[in-house]
Image (cartoon, rainbow, N blue to C red):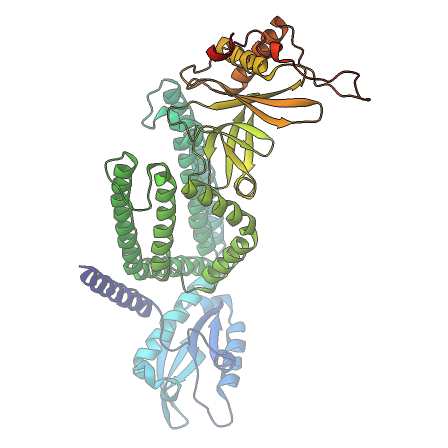
Length: 545
């Protein structure tokens, strides 16, 4: 199928090329060179900047260049009466050569012989003379109009009428654009537009803008047509008018040839992108099954499906772009290559830090060190993970601030995940106090446990746990660990627990103050055995007697 399409496009390209070339050859003469060198230009007769014929014969010591100069001087000596008479061809014999003499008002203008013809033109002397006569007659008519005041006056009137028509066209385009803008604004306000309303904040009144662009293009085209037409009215500028027309045809021909020649490559690029889109659609279906838990793939977990999908999409699209690049129109041009090198250099210089953060993001996602919704502590930041991006991780702190931490910083530091060990969503909360040695540790344990039981948001199905972390010089460091209910705010629970600890310690007359001694106290700082179980602590059954 693809081969058939390529062959069909080649056939169309060849047909269009032959057609356009035939049009070109039928409207241009064969004798004057289309792209002459300096020597050929000196041998070519020009009238009003238009090439008439290139002379090649040499008469005695008279070179073709000298013949061109003599013809030019002859043309300058013609009067207005001479120009009114049509040109004629008279067969003559000069220098033992058959020739055709072109005369105007019985005055010789140019002699054309067999040796002036180019063998590649495949023309007879009479055919060549007729072609030269037709070109010179066209220029004679233009020169005659130059002396005709009535013609010039009529051309001036036509020019003024053309200016008026052009201004009316521009004014009509402007008024129609204003009407179209009001019409679509009214439809948008009435919610009767074909474009969905939620798209309007991105594209606005796109219809009015497209219509304005169309009117601008039509106005430029109208000015171009008017300018070419006005140039063709006056003898002095007629060559410019024809040049504008020839330039338009040449541009249209080149555009048509470029479009036809680019069709095979565009179709191949389209096929590559369609295959790529189909592959990504298939992978999306498979990964959605993994994310839903209905399918298991080695190394792919439900929480890493999102990153895996993005990573695979980037790799597949890069591969597709690499495969389609040679078939893009203009891919082999120097401009296209220069732009590619420029963007490649920008990407190389600017992607060092970005790639570092992106790779760190992949490490975070695929190591599953944290997930969205986890409560973590990173450096000085503690809060709820709201987003794990390719470049940064966002944390909502207890002050309800959103802190954005670059992934490279997260990976390079210590990550404390407070909720990963509790599948039900509860969080372990720990608080610490330091109490002097004169307070029984059993009493401290009991008071901390009582404070935990009184606090709101504590999951009492998991008993509070009190630890003695360190025996310091003047006090003991205690730690209370509790399990919070699912969804309980860490900051609110910590505040609630601190409040209840203070209330319980005040209730039992125990100060939360760490003593520091400047000198050795008179008595030993200790707790006698009969004070081991001060309220709210209770002695075990075996120790109550």
